[in-house]
Length: 606
Image (spheres, rainbow, N blue to C red):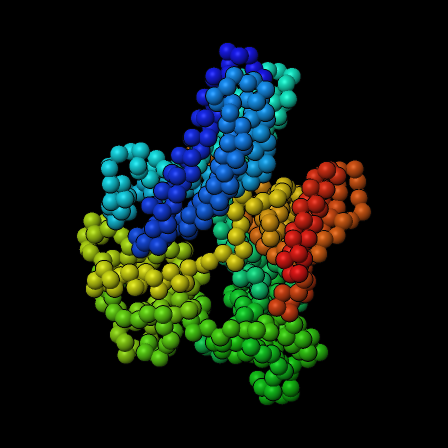
């Protein structure tokens, strides 16, 4: 043990570790009960990050309570060293405390998610325009002292996990080099420093990919959705996946004229273009809108029967004449191959027109009634009859109207929250935040506002699989060999960067174009780290119970092949992603992590 002159300092340090840990756990409980739990349910904050932070805090609390109890147990076993000059006993206690740190080091990685969310939540909570939020925070701080504010409590987890290496470093300086306790203290210090490095790395990762993870975690895993997988990608005729393609003559929807179009069918649906050189489709028919395809008995020609097929959707029936009668059945078979087995009928249709015809009073609703809405262009406030149901929000001139003035689809809604009276110069106003615009709606009373916000929040995306950075087993950049088959024939692996993330229960694949952004144009997060400014070219999430892993044969010294296959999704063909890592070690990391996911899923099923 350390020299006798250091015994008193060592005792003080161990006492400090225990007492500050008790205070820290108590403050975590206050943070949860006084602030984060209520903020998860109020109407004036709708952020998913706050709910995630609250959930992550519960995990941290669980670990810290166990950690604190372990410290108490070990220190109480050797409590006599606080009243005697027994360097060996103090050394035994120091060893025991170091072992406690070693045993919980892996658990402390859960701080990655909290620290990653911290800076984003700070931006939300520091909003000067949100008067209800500011009033809530002031009411929760009864003493009006900074030490009892949310700002003081919420930073403590970030500070505490980074302080553990400093405490261990002090212990190491007070112990005798070469002693048993010094060896264990240094081992615990090295492990905790790795934990802090991991947390810092995950913060940087979150700054770059958190928006992508949020979108992936809320997507419907039972379908392959074009806009979910390819959110910012153009869809030229010669750069999208193809099951079948070719020219045909289509009847117009309104004018009923017949025009030659180039059709492309893939696992997302049916696209048609002016020609095969077109950069954008004239229209896209999602597979989920398709009901049936059959050969047509309609003959638009007076002199002879030409091959045609009919495609039935929710909105209309498409009549398409093939270039040859022999092409009719191949087109029908290809279309039937992608029609969903369990197709859901929508009460709201996502067409190009935001107007559709449905009686306001005939719809099943979560909530309906009159509110006053601000106009999009003229900013005038007019009374509208609103309907909220499982598919989205509609508003009408009156309850008797059959023509909806506007539709807000469920998948467009990003948030809903109450806003302050000073912000709009009106009381009882809430905002609906969508990908296209923000809607402002005024209610008759605050109680009515709470009911509307609660009803609309039922439409917000909820994570199907939680993708917290603290749950990442491994991640890295790979070469995606068959990217052209899945993304498009003109997409080259050399022009893209593909990252694979192996989480506890799923594997995420995110591919982005290699775009150089000027340094002065790169957005910066509140913590000073660069935020992502490159949109996703492609992204997909594969659940752990839907993966088949295969290790390929090496093609060169710096290319080590491996692949994962996603099994059939709603009747679609299985999809295989072929990757290559730059070293055997990198491939082994991915293979081991995915095998752990597969093993975990098989044990869960048992």
